[in-house]
Length: 428
Ligand SMILES: Cc1ncc(COP(=O)(O)O)c(C=O)c1O
Image (cartoon, rainbow, N blue to C red; front, side, top):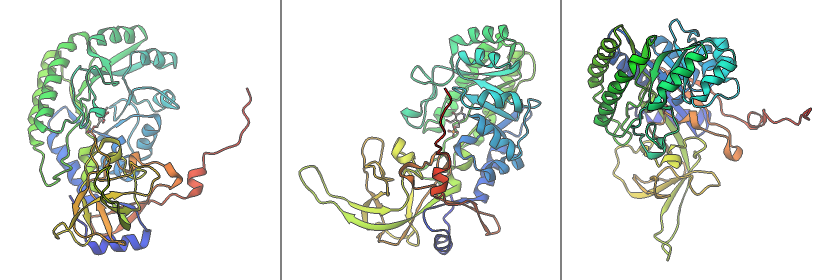
C-alpha cells in the first residue's frame, strides 16, 4: 500500500484543491501481475470486475495485462470497448453479467457481440425477443456464499443474484427452446473476510459445477467469480493467493475430466486489483466538540471536505478504511476523533462501523488545514461516488511509475451536474 510523501500530497492539493483521488500505477500493475501469477496455467483466464473501478486508465492497464472484462451494464461494455477491449465471442473477452437488462443492455449485446451472463430465468426470453441467437452464460445461485458484510451476500436464499441451482436445468431447457446455447456456467460467491472461507467456497462451487456438467454438452467455460479479499485493516498482510493457483489448476482439470473435453476456468476479481491502489486525500476544515449529556458521551469531530458522495463504503456498509494525518504518519495517537464530511446527512462519517453511526479513531493531533489520507479507496470508491448535495465528483489523479502525475478526470462543476436536465414536452 503506498504512503505517498507528504510533500507530493501537499503539492497536489495546492494544484487541484481537495478532495482528490490519487491512483498509483505501480500498485495496480503489481496486483495485475499477482493475478496473472495465479492464472498462468493453460486454460485459466482472469477477468476484471470493472464495476470496482471503471476508469479508462485502469481498463487500459487490464488490456496491457491480458485481463478480460466482466461488465454489468451496457455502458460498462461500451466503456471497456472504448478502452481497447475487443467485442465478440471468439474469444469472449467481455462478458456482460446482468441481474436486469435496462437501457441499452440488450442492444449492446447484439451490437458488440459480447457474451451475456444471465442472472434471472426471464432474461432468456428477453434475449430471444430482442432477436439474440447464440451463446449465453448462466449465473448460478449455488445456495451458499458470503459477502464481506451481509448486504453484499452473493449466494444463498437471501441473495438476488443468479438462478437458483435447482432451477438451472429448467433454464437450460428454456435456452435451448429459444435457440440459445449455454457455453458458460458462472457463480460469484463473494469475498468473506477470511481467505480460508473463500478457498472452501470455491472448492464447494467446483463440486457443484461438476454435478451440473452432464446437462451442458456445449459448455466451454466455468467461472468461479471474484471475491479475492483485501485486508483493509492491515493492508501489509499479504493474502496467500498462491494457494488459489493450485485450486484453479485442479478445478480446471477436474471439470475438464468430468466434461470429457477441455474447459476454460475463469475468475473475475474486482477489489483485489484496485483496492490498495488509490488514496482519497481530503482537508480538515475544522475540529469541534460535542459535550457529554444524558444522551451519551461527547466526541471530537474532525470535519473534512470529502464525504460519502466521494467514498460511500463506510456509510453504506460500515467499511473500515485506514486514515492517516499527512506528515504525521509515525506519530503516536493524541486522541480519538470522528472524521466527518460536508453532507447534510448524519451518516456522513468515515469512522463508523455497520452498527453505530460513529466510531472515533485514534489519530495523531489533527488541526484545521491538515490533509488526511483515506487509504485503500480504489475499489468501489470513485465508482460509487455521486452528485448528492450537488457537490460534483472530485478529480482523479494518476501517479506514474516515473513520478509524473496526470489528471484523469477533472473536478465536476455545476454544468456537469445539470447536463442531463431538460424541459422537453413529451408527445403522448
Ligand atoms: C458478478 C461479480 N463478479 C465479480 C465481482 C467482484 O467481487 P470482488 O470485488 O469482491 O472481487 C462482483 C462483486 O460483487 C460480482 O458481483
